[in-house]
Length: 147
Image (cartoon, rainbow, N blue to C red):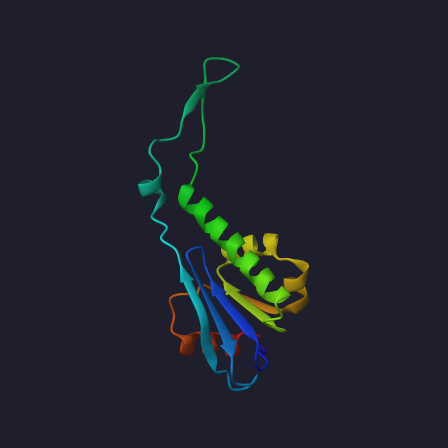
């Protein structure tokens, strides 16, 4: 993937966002950390207090159960929306002209729901991979290998 000089690269998942800037060129990436933000999001079993509920069906003697709310996933989705909001603010401040986003497929889908036009106009590429826990050198290699 082409990552021009001074491009903004965001590596995110539902718990961590890593903002990088390419200080190198498209051939020789040199990603430098601009900002890191992480949130504490315990597993759903630690956030919920009860099992799924049940109700009597309107017809017959059957019962119907409700799907329990996944608070962990809700928080990850909220975090992705917050990431998109930060990108919008930074786009309005002209902090970047070219944007590359790296995120796992679910997070990428959630980000896309919240991209603002200013962000979309600057978006040059996306990579659907979870690289938040990887060192910067591996992120660079993954971007170079992506086509």
